[in-house]
Image 1 (cartoon, rainbow, N blue to C red):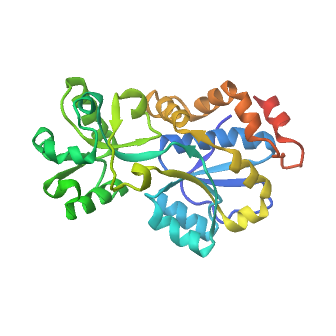
Image 2 (cartoon, rainbow, N blue to C red):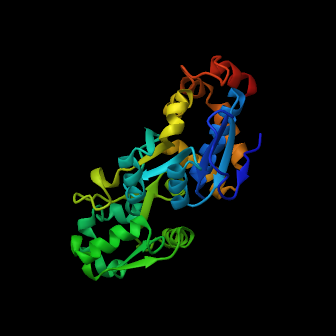
Length: 300
């Protein structure tokens, strides 16, 4: 079963045609989750239209009616985009769909074992790191946090430098350093394949620079409110559509690193987790009002 992609907005979604317009940024985890949702919703009588666009356009689409659902509302990183729509009532927050998400600074295991376990340990070892923190792009939420920390000299980071490149370049630098057992500190997060491939540890930050509980994050499922009000069955579906950080890290690894097709990764997860799927679909019906699980089970 293929996942249809349209590059751009498809116009205001209709509330009665069974189409679910889902915004999909170029993130492996959201791509695979959208493929899983598609393979569940289609046997239930719905049609998924996955629109591959950027984050800002997704939020604009939720506000204007061009988008119905977004599975990647990462908070607190996206608060500037999320908060205005939440406060205006334009969007409905359905559920945190990833348990255990986090973003903060990380180091390789061998540095953690040497005693670099907290942000407080960084400046004491400034020469070891050459005063450099690796991040993944000027203007990113992570780099904004680090810029603010440097401006405020938090944890003595005032004379440190952010090495802003890209996700690929940052993780390439981390891989090279780990292979040579050299010192490096970079922005890490989960879910992501780095948690499976790298022996790494998240640093403790009692000041919560990256958010409360040491960068604890939520990955929210958002729906535009009029669409949610008109489709309570889909609200029930997406309310149960949740994963662990480890599960999504596996999805990201299979698609992003092993370059498998998202449909194939989605189908494997569904076929390997029938009990989870059945639990997701409890009290959910097909578009015709029949129990959803028998229809999905027959398709799988």
